[in-house]
Each structure stands twice: as structure tokens, then as C-alpha cells.
Length: 431
Image 1 (tube, rainbow, N blue to C red):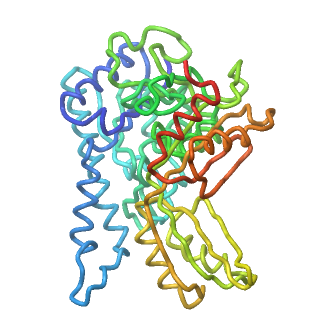
Image 2 (image 1 turned 180 degrees about the vertical axis):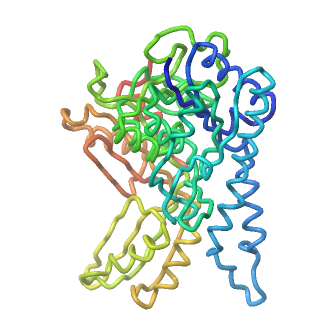
Image 3 (image 1 turned 90 degrees about the vertical axis):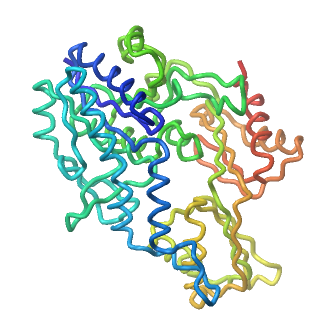
């Protein structure tokens, strides 16, 4: 008997017909003698609807009589109570469909396991998973259908893990259960060298290292959530990305190591025989640029800018600082998630007196494009090739960020697809 964790995203459970398709995949594994936990997301579009209801209830988009925007700082504990209900619905429906198909199953909410988190509501981090009863029931033949994206925070309040948090739920459960594998079912059949909708010549990777997948996820690839990859790498959880739309009666036929069928295995680097210099090109349009003009150039000013943002749980990515000719002032530009732009601007406006800037600007007309590959460690000149290729296409670079296996550039959003196609060809990924 193998112990498997299967995770199905929102498009895989979009309606009852697709939930029945998910049940067929689960039944295939059960009939094969495997013990299964199934982690589900909310039905496609439901989370957005619930978020919209929260914002409408709070009056976030409603202007007050004096023309000032309503505060973005609503009670995130109540936000979590509302938004987490989408996964609860899906878990109950799937358990019912499995029972109707003759499979012993029950639904579990995050607090029932329990999956414990910290108190950072809306973007909580998992602090522990207690799987004693859950595992005993699984080994006794019962399928555990688990609401992803949620856990229980201090004070017995429901907490959500942030967008894409169901992936993190699945990997955390796989680690706690010591599962043989964590299968992430989505609407694509694996991890591609880039978005096939942008580059038709993009191809599926059979295997990708944890580090490359982590960079791909953090730089815009939507296949896996960043924290789930980070957790998989820390715990050594083997993750198989596969399509929920493969025929359930065929998906189990193939390579026994990966469970059969098509897919991409996320694993340790030493399990991959041959590595390209660049394995993939990622891009992100969901970032926003924040610029502070005429900030006093003095020790501690960066802490005064980024400290309040950290306290508000707003992640900052690329940072560029330009010192003026007089040496007394600096312009500071950085990026945040576009969903956090309004909150970031509000935090910085409230901190204007302590920071001491002249003007504050925010925009969303940017894109981040990244080249990623562990082969960069042993090959020089990758950045020079990348910058030259973009320059030949007339694409201006606004900011640059690098790591040992990644080079990211910030560009005008209008040039995002051209940049992706250019770099995909440049690094020999077209096939």
C-alpha cells in the first residue's frame, strides 16, 4: 500500500461534473490499493466572489462624503471566516460523490485535523499538523477529503494561507503523513518551459529540481504556489504535477515511479540526469510598482520604508534606489503584488512623516520576466546574452534582480510576451 496525497485545484472542481471526474481519479487510486488523502480548493471563481462580498461589506470601494477612499484595513479574521467557506463546500460535495460511488470517505476542515497556523490572518503560515486520527482512518480504508487553504490559528479562529494555499496544505499534509508522493492535479499536464499560450513551442519538462520550481513559482509560473514548493524542498516531499483532465482509466498507466500518465516530477537536483543552462522562462503581470520620490538619503531610511510594510504583511520584491546628484536625496522604487498596491500606498502615506518623502506613486503597467536554470551556476555570460537580446527588440529594463539560478527584469507590461518569446528562443527552449 502506498500513501498518497492528491490535491485538486479550483478548475478541477468547478462544478459537479468535474467533481465526479475527480472522484473517478480518487477511486482509481483506492482500487489500486492506495491510502488517500484528497485536498481540494474552492470551486473556480468562488473565492473571488467571497472576497468581493467581504470588500462590499466593508465598503472598501465606496468613497466617503469628503472623497477619501475607505480604509483597506478590514478585520482579516472575519475575512478568513468568509473566504474559507469555499473549500468547505467542495470537500463536502466530493465526500458525497465518493460515497455515492461506493468509496468510504468523509470531509475534514482544517480545524478538525487540526492543521495549526500562526496568527497572520489572510496569509497564515503552518506551524504544525496533527495527523494521528487522520492517518489511522486512511490506513483503515477511509478517504480523507480535506478543505485546503485553511487551518486553525491561536484563539481558535479560522485562518487562511493566502492565494494558492491549498497547494501548501497538501504538501504539509504529505510531509506530516510521510506520504510516498504528493500529486498536484491542475488544468495542465505538467510544468512547461514557459506559458504555451504565449510560446506554442514550449514543452513539458519530465523533471524539474525543487530550486528551479521554487524560482519558477515565485517569478510568475502559476502551476504551483511558492510556499508549497519551499515546504516540499525542506521536507523532501516528491511532488508530481499532473492534469485532472486526463482520462481516469488511463492516467495510472505508465512510469511506476511517477504514478503513470503525463506529468512533471519535482524532485532533488541529483535525480535529474541532464540539465539545460536555462530550464524555463517565467513572467508575472500581477505585480505593481511603487516609487518614493526625494527620500532623504540617510542611515535607517530603508527600514523606515520597509518596516511598516512588513508589519502589514506586504511582501516586497525588486528594489531599485537612485541617489540624486546632490547626494542628499534618493528615489526608491520597489514592487509588490498588485493586490497589495492599495494597502501598500496607504501604509506609506500613514508613514510619510517618519520617512520624509516628497511624492508617492503607484502603477500596475509593469511585468517581470525571468530566466531560470540551475545550469547558470556553471555557465558565465547568461545575463549579458539576455540583456543584449532584449535590447535588440527595443525592450527597456527598469530593474534587475538576480540569484544563483535566476535573472529577473522589470519591463513595460506591453512588451511582456515579446520578451518571453525572445528569451525562450535565445536559450534553446524552442522544440
